[in-house]
Length: 285
Image (tube, rainbow, N blue to C red):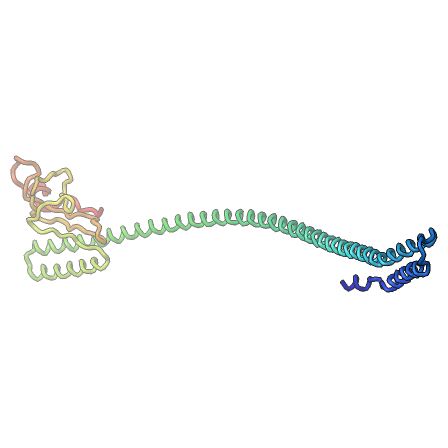
C-alpha cells in the first residue's frame, strides 16, 4: 500500500487543463451566441470538450496502469523470493540427502562390522564351549576316579572294621563258652566299645535275637543251598550283620531250629553234623 501511495499521479494539472478546455468551449459559445455556429467553431467546441474529458480520464488510467505494473512487479518479486526459497529448500534437501547417504554408508559399515564381530564372538563362544566341555569331561573323569578311589578306600576300611568286629564277636562267644563270668563281662564291654565306635562312623551291627523268625532279607545260612521252612526260628547267631548309613551291607549268619526240608529229622539248619559253628566265615556284601 505504501508503494501504491507513492506511485499516485498528481491529478490537478489534468483537472486544470480540463477546466481550461471547458472554459474555452464555454467562452466560444458565449462570444458567438448567434446560432447557428460555424463549422469550425462547433468543431473547436467538440474538440475542447473531448480534450477536457480525455484530460479528466487520463490521470485515472495512468494511475491504474501504474498500479497494475506495481502489482505485477510485486508478484514478480514475491515469485522470485519464492523461487529463491525453493532453491534454498532444494539445497537443504540436497545437503540432507548427502548427509543421509553418508549416514547410510556409516550404518552399512557398522552393520558389516557388527556382523563380523558377531561371527567372531560366535566362533569364540564355540571354542569356549568346547574348552569348557573338555574341561568338564576331564574334571568329571578326575572326580570319577577320586570317587572310585574313595569307594575303594571306604570298602577297604569297612571290610577291615567288619573283620575286627567279627573277631571281637568271636572272642565274646569264646568267652561265653569258657563260662568265666569275669572274662565274659570284660569281653562284652570290649565288644560294646568297639560297636559304639563303629556306630559313630555309620556302621551299625545287626544282631538278631534267638527264636526270632528267619527273614531272608536280614539273615542268611552258612550253606546257601539250604532252604528253611516257613516260620523257621533262629537257634544261634554265628556272625552279626551290618548296615552302613541305613544300607544293609551284610546279613547276619544264623542257625535255625527247623530242618531245611519238610519230613526230615529235626536238626540245626545251617550247622552241619549238628555243630553250631559255621564252615566258612561270613563275607562283606
